[in-house]
Length: 254
View 1 (cartoon, one colour):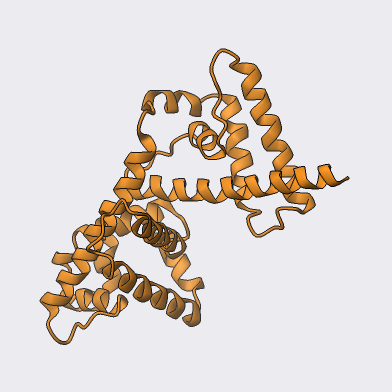
View 2 (tube, rainbow, N blue to C red):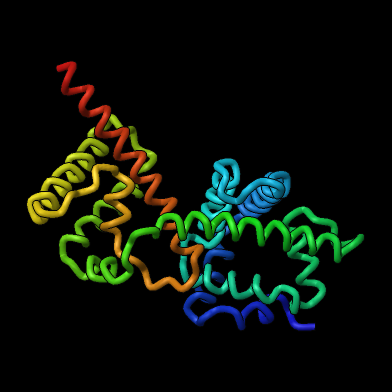
């Protein structure tokens, strides 16, 4: 029987496989167990709402949790995510021992009715995929791929990207603090500059819409990569909104 590591190798590029190995070396037993426990709990939550419409808010919140947990599990690396997606799509052809390990990872019984356990896993996987798809396609309604590609080459877009990454790295900061307020000021200036550059084109007022329209697309091939980006955009958007609101309150009270 092929060792698990050599069997999984075929799903990954050389670079992604090396990064995957590094992540596994750095993970402590406690971190690995916490990750497994998180997946088991989330699986049960999703399984409990299979009767709902994938577009409903309850399901969408679980889909968000699923995608962000996948981000943690893969360190947000798109290459590792792509390999993991390829592996999942082929899981029915895995060696029996690897299928059992997959079931155990989600807290499913591999020693009893394996077929029933696999069916549960596949039902949840299909359902969460539908929920993620609703998020992705809903966000792209009315948006031109060509215009997004064009914006990614625009130097001004890189300023939005830089701000996005800086805010993402500061999500644990106090929105009322000096660092967050400096980021909010950068946001305000970029928005003003964009309005000056395109006076004839109405600019979106909503934080989320502005970030979505300015953030250039990655060369990702899987929808889940795009959805993960959308969820990160929502986190950054919410943080900036709080920071600016608190900044305004502070100025009004001065």
